Structure formats: structure tokens, C-alpha cells
Length: 371
Image 1 (cartoon, helix red, strand yellow):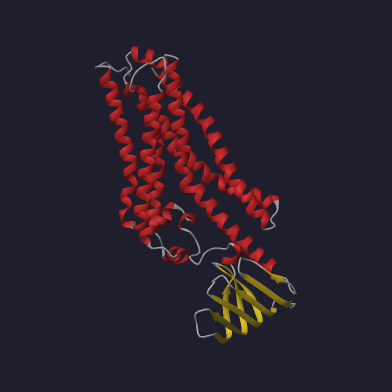
Image 2 (image 1 turned 60 degrees about the vertical axis):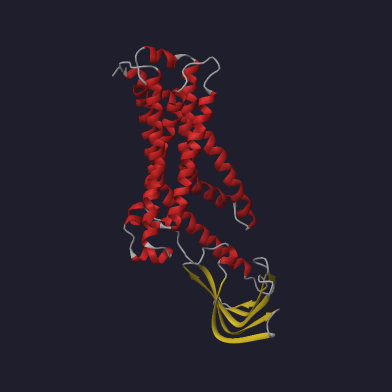
């Protein structure tokens, strides 16, 4: 019966490649269009846009592969049923458990693909993407510091530099911040320097003052300073104050986070371990999705009208598993100590698949399964 295994596995693999290509293309193009608009508005070249879209590709693939596995299994089982091949296999004595073997192998293959992506390629892509975003943010910040012209790097922000010295010092800097409708803050300094930090570019103002005018306050408050730091990275899309993201690091390092990682991300050790367990649990959804798509369609037997009702139930089962996955991720995000919940959706999906296969076998009565 190994020929049947190879036949079903080949069918599922071919359909999986088709659905994966379609879903990745649609999802990736959707994200690429948003990146295209954002980067071109910042004055970036087409090569930068291409680089950014390529770096998002592993993230997109890891997201859609389980869905592609489900679609391939459901469509392939429906095709086998409509062409009476599934009925012929069952008439030859193959039980639902025996028919599920190539589907399980297919699901494990997809799970290995997802594991390679989420444990290796996606963290590398995210880290590189974060570095490139920081570099572009600094370049954009430098573009805003043109001497002799008023610049508007963000809504409510006005910036003016009289001149730039040969050594890079900004002379006679003026910043007006009106992002808070209840208070207008004006910064002025004789000199300023652009300093690169882990959270993005920072302006270091020297020998200046801060004027704050509040609508509900006593009036104008003036503060003089010898040195003051003003974060311009947030105005140009740089990194947040937390710096690095946990998703930029490898899984093994997250399981045993060191102090450098915790300081770079501003996260706790429990949150780092929870992120690692979420990656470990993510590939488990691929065989679950494949088995749900197969086992649900075995219920009901052959019909000239097809198995579209069973397809609907299979989709509902997949939605339930995904809902539980999102719910578990939300709970663990609030309390990292609950990381075992991340494995519950895969367990629930596996239990549903086993129950459906048992029902399919019981509906046809006891038969000897061929090996």
C-alpha cells in the first residue's frame, strides 16, 4: 500500500505548493504596497523598497503555511471523494486511521518548514529589518536638519537650524513642539549635536532654554540648561524607547535570556521564555490543520453533491483552533507564567482530529486496516 501513500503525499504536496504560492503572493503584495508607499514618501529608492519587502517574506511565509496545508488537505480530500478514489480505497479495506498516515507525514513536513522559519529565518529577517529601519530613520533625521529652512518632521513639530559647522555642530537650533494641544513647548540652543543611540538618533542641545506655555497653567515657564537631550528618532519612525524586540533574537537565547538581552529589549526573563515557547508551539498547528482538513471530510461518506458541508465544518474547526491560539497568546502576553497555554490549541486540534477519525471509522463498522 505504499503506492497509495506516495500518491496521496504527492497530491497533497502539489496542492500545497499551489496554495502556498497564491496565499504568500496575495499576503506579501498587500504588505509590499504599504511598505512601498511609506518608503517612497520618505524619499527611499526602489532598491530599499525591494530589500524591505524581501525581508518581510519569511514572516509572511511562516504565517500562511499552516493555512496552505489546511487548504491543500481539504481540497485534495474533496477531489479524492468526488472522483470516487476515496471510496475505492475504503472499499479495499483501508481504515480512516490508515488513510490518515500520509496526511500526518505531510503535516509533519509542513511543520518542519515552519520550524525552520520561526526559529531561524524570521528572527534573522526581523533583526536585519530593525537595523535597516534604524539606519533609514537616521538618514531621514539628517535630511530634516537642513540649514536655513523650516522643517516639519512630524505633525505639530517645527524645526529650524541656522547653519551647520564643518565639524557637524548645529548652530542656533529652534524646535517648536505643539503635539500636546494644551501646551506649546519651544526649545532653543546655541549649538546641538546629532548622537546615535540604540533607540535612534538623539539631538543633544547645548546652552539653551525651554519655554513651556500651558493653557491651564500660570503662564510661560522658562527653563535654562547647559545640556539637554531631545529624541528625534520617534519623529522619524526610529525604534521605540524599549530598543530591540524579543522577536529579533534566536529561540535558544530566549529560552535562557542573559542580562544583555533583557537590557536591550527592556523585557523580563519570563516574557523572553514565553516568546520562545510561542515559537515552539507555532509549528504544531501545521499538522493539526492538515489533519482537521482531512478527518472532517471523511465524515458523511460519498455524496454526488460533494463534501462542501464537511468543508464548512473543517473551516469552523480551524477557526476554533486559531481563536484558541490567539486567546492563549493574549493571556501569555499579560502573564508570561502561563506559557503552557500556548500548547493547548494544538492539543485541542489533535483531540478533534482523533475524535473525527474515530467517528469516521465507527460509521463504517469494523474493518481490517491494511498495512
